[in-house]
Image 1: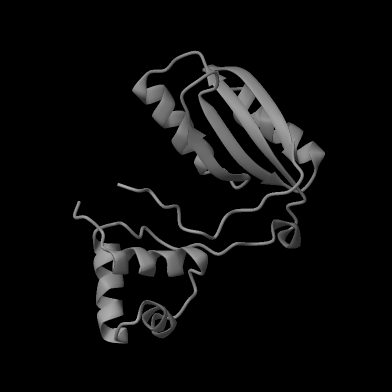
Image 2: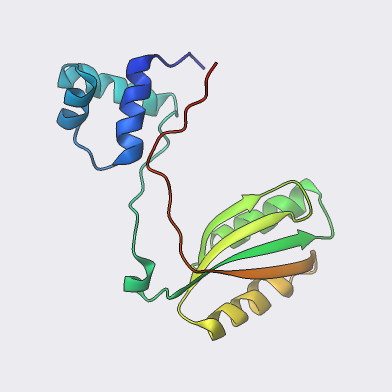
Amino acid sequence: MRKLDHVDIAILACLYEDPCMTNKAIAEAVNMAPSSCLERIKRLQHEQVIRGARSLLNFAALGGHIQAMVAVRLSSHSRDTVDQFQQQLVAEKEVLSVFHMGGENDFLLHVCVPDALHLRDFIFNQITERDAVTHVETTLIYDHISSTSLPHFPE
């Protein structure tokens, strides 16, 4: 992968803060012509530095009144078991994110459900019924905020 320059980083910072920012506004912010800015953005997309954009949603407005983090340990750590668990769970409508981790737990799932009974049923039906699962721990999320500042990694 080629090294990103200060203009690339400035463009990424704009998009990280606001994925809906127009090309014209980004070009103004980084002090370049809109056509040149668009070419940079397209190159960053082609190089998969930019892998998409997402909207931040109010899940409660959609009926998702409970969010939780679900820690899961597996009995088998074969590539097939891990890949299958990850792919099957990320496809469930309640799952927002799947984190495959090192350490005591193998996975951390960020889930959103309408109520406590739905959460219980999801845990029983989609997680604990799996033969490979040996431990599940659920923690409720009271609030969640994300940074809109691009992380900076000095060389």
